[in-house]
Every structure is written in C-alpha cells, then in structure tokens.
Image (cartoon, rainbow, N blue to C red):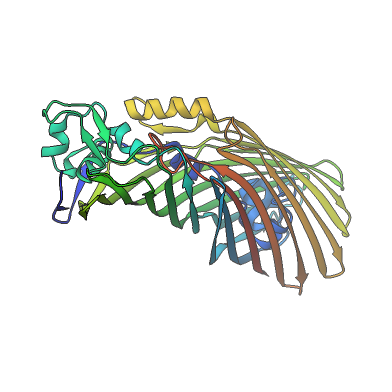
Length: 500
C-alpha cells in the first residue's frame, strides 16, 4: 500500500491530447435570449420588425427600419435557480449576477436624391452578451449502485503500469492522467505488479451505499460584437448584413466528494475521496448574417434571415487535484494526496457551431400596437470540432452527429401603446438539441415589460423567465450517473435609449 503525500513542483505542460467533449461544444452552440429590454420583453420576436438594436441579432436588415440615429445601453440582473434531484435527495442552489449586457448604436443616412429608389442607408455597431455563464450547481445524495472508481478504471484499462508508476502527471495525455490520479491516490490497484500490467481493480469496497456531493461553479461570458450595414428600397424592402466578432471567457470549478458506508476490514480500503477539477476556456470567433424584411402592406411585414456557423478558435487550461482517505480496522486512517500542481495547456483547437435560418411575420395595428412571430431552425448535429482529421475529434464529431438533432424555435411578441406608454409581452419555445430530449430538455420562456417615450429619450424595463430540465452525468465515462436538474432563469433588464 502507498501511504504518502505526492507533490510535484508547480509547473505547466503543453499537451496535444484533447479533452474536449460534447458539453463543451454545446456551451457555445446554444445562445441565450439577451439584448435590450424591449427585445427581451417581446420574446426576441423581431425578425420582421427591426427598429431595435438587438433586432440586428435576428435580422440585420432591421437597422434600415430606424427613422433616426439611436444609441442605447442595457443593464441586466440575472437570477438562476437550479433544483437538483439525485437518487431522491433534493437540493437547491442559486446564483445572482449583474451585468452590462448590451450597448450599441445605429446611424441612418437618408438619400437626398428624391428620384432614387434607395431611400436610405444605415450602419450600426452593437454588442450583446449572448451568454452569461455565471452559474452554481450543487447535487447530493446516496447512490446505491455505483462509485466514482469506475471513472478511473475506465481510463486505466490498457495503460501499462510502468506509465502510472514511473511517469510524471505532466508527461501523460488526458486519459492517462486520469488513470495516474486514480493509481497514485490508491483508488485503483494493478492486478499484477509487473510493469507491463494493463488491468486494474478498485480499492473502493463494492456493494455499499455511496454518498455523493457534486459542486460546480462557473463564470464568464460569450460576447458578440456586430458590425452592421443595411439599406431600404422604396421603403418596402430592407436588406442588411452583419459581420460578427465573437469572444469568450469561461471558467469552471468542480468538486466531487464520495463517502461509502461499507464496514471496515483488516485491509485498507478507500472510505472517502475528493476530486477537484479546474477548467479555463478562452478564444475568439467569427460569423456573418444576411437578412431581408419586406413591407407587404402597411400592416403586414415578412422577414427572412440566415446566420452562418460561428467559427471559434479556442484554448483550454486544465488542472486537477485528488485527496483519498483509506481506513482499516485497528489501523490509523491514511491520506493519499495527489496534487501535481500542474496546469495543462492544450493545443488550440477550432469549433464550428451550426447555422440558423429564421422566418418571421409581423402585423402592425397602425400606431396602437403589433404582434410578431419568429420561427427558427437549427441543426445541432452539424456541430464540429476541428481539425476533423484528428482521430479524437473525428470520434467526438461522429458521436455528436448521432446524438444531436435538428431543432425548431418559436418566439412570439406583442406590443400595445397607450400614448407614450408601451406594454409588452412575449413567449419563447425552443426544442432540445438532443435526440433523447433528456440530456437537455425543451426550453419554455415567458416575458413582459413596459416602456416610456420621453421624446428623444426612451426608458424600457423587462422581466423574463425561462425553464429547462436536464440530466447529465457528473463525468463523461466510467461513472456517468448524474442528477436531474430543473433550471429556472429570471432576468430583469433596463434599457436607456437616446435618439440623436
């Protein structure tokens, strides 16, 4: 038995081995509904309307609908509540944050040539925080069947004992590092002490109830800066284009704790362990959008917009730490601490998210109000890590293609004006990107708000709420049990607009 503190000097390693998974891809493939307060209050249904700074995110032709120059800024309060159910034990975790989530402006240039059919030209710059990653999750309960030892065993099988015994953590690829932690932490043992041994057994007692706690904290953002240009033909057809710059900064800290209730024997067995993981992902991306809005009659508007894939260039930093406690009858407890103090810097990689097509309809009741409907389609099975000829990425892409699905999204918004006051409401439904509808479920959201026009200044306030269920494993292989999560997101946004 190994009884010691394992500690390497602080350092780092550059690794060519990938650890990117489907959850990493979906983090950037899915967008949240963020933007101005008016946009949020009406469920984001602006594809056939335009005239709002965040409408550019749906249809870039929307900037040509503006009559005057406009600049605006939006502050938002985010409240996330995660209800967890793990083998019948229910827990709740909340996260609150405050953010400047939108800022931008549109500038309109009218054509002074009255004989021209091209009535005006507009340019715009708008920033939207399309995803706020601030979140906290806590799950706890007793698993009657499985221990986390399966995670370490799944990586260890097939790896020679000599690599786990004689190599340092920083010289191994991601899979071998997981096996290394399990071996050095005395969670797994080789079947044979021969250096060529490739089979391992667990030191965690079988058949006991395993009490688990899984804590995860994330923070960061996924921002989108759009450079827009649009034009109007006879004030009946509006055409626009966006060039989008994306940038992301994401940090994830997780801690998994296990304790078993098996009776002690004369041999040392693992009674509890703590497994910590830290991930930092950062990078940039590019996408483009084209769109058109047709004013069919004074009341009816139609819109069509295409959003390309986003091509991300990302980098990951990753570190781990493991503490395991072993006990035996009439013997003192021992701690096996595996703290390499090594940060893995993985080779930069590329991620291509799926494109999106949006069709829109709006009916305008003169100056008294409107109703708008957006319908969007997105095929998540087209999500890809690159380079595609990389064996690891090729397998991951094939897996995503088999489990992810085409989705439909519906957004409905309405507005009613009472002189200078506007009342708004919205609805949003988005299908699950997974074929099984369980890993991540459908999303349903409701919203409402109001706005007041002071003349050259406008003030808008909105409240929106969305709910989604999910069930994902705490780990990606070997031990894939996870909690059922019900996530409720509440948002309050305040937008201040100035017409110039």
